[in-house]
Length: 372
Image (cartoon, rainbow, N blue to C red; front, side, top):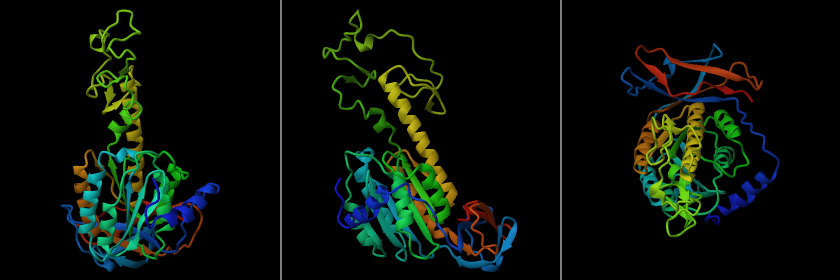
């Protein structure tokens, strides 16, 4: 896919030189530490708190609150949309629901729109003009060839685009979570987000059907009913001395205590526990494993940032996820402080945020930060 208007400078002058170098060193250095939190009552409803009600402890030592941003105050929000080949069947739904999401965004927020396949595109740079973002989303199209540079998209957006000195920053990533072409590693992307203070909202779409059929969908000899190839176009299997039709298969079925429909392969918790005998079973197994690994990665991104992971089995669920993210951004507070011990020791420092008011709990925050 060619670089879209407004994105070419980024592809040429940021991505290409960076990726041509040796593996980049990730460092986020700042004196002020930021944590995104929600304060709720016993029913889970968000409540308002005052600065003198908040207590901050780093490695057990109390810290002094520096700044408190209440729910509803502006965010810098980056929206990253996967436009790799696995989105080809849902691209219109992605556009429609993403436009609706931006339309609901409070006008005080600034937004950045990034799309990615095997390259990263800055489609709409930081702007408070939400209509401009919506118009740009309408022009996005899926690349039907190529890979997915997810880790690069997350890292480069975090490093190169979140440059404004504000602790109120969030990144929403709609993707299946499967990476093919990145120079950054999975581990590096997680560490960078953990250090950056960016609140992450990964939304995962289900691409298992795409990957299950990716290698066979264009094969005229592939029988989708059985997951086998039959070079004899009459429908008979020339490798079988009896010339049986696929439907005449009389083999004993695999053990099937909890089958994936149509595969006959055993599963535990919906994940196949073997490679399977047929091509379809093997591809289903691979797709399941890829999806599970991607889910683990996206869940960890959310966890280390204090954000939230969303799983969307169908495109209609994207609207629900977007709606919940709007609510999260409206409710979340941002608490900042400067550590009394200004150390850059490369160690992880545990942080606990409490509220002194009876019946109020602190939720949705990360466990600490790396002092680098």
